[in-house]
Length: 67
Figure 1 (tube, rainbow, N blue to C red):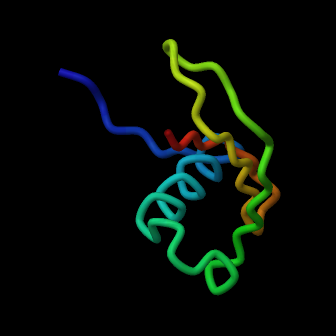
Figure 2: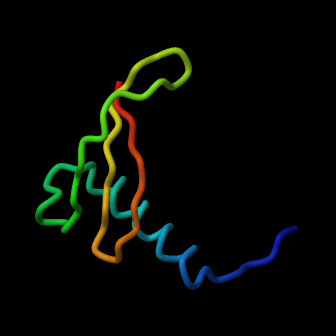
Figure 3: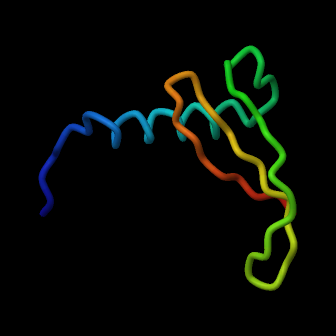
């Protein structure tokens, strides 16, 4: 079996930011202190979804796609 570890540093911050983003469902980004930026359309698996860039309070940036 695997062993338990603790995520620290940038890995831990990225995981925490992802959890906050997905748990809040982006309902109230201002309250959650998430900055949303529309990047444009992307090409993903034959579709053209909208691409957003989310920036959290600890300056972690992530891309989210909506089709």
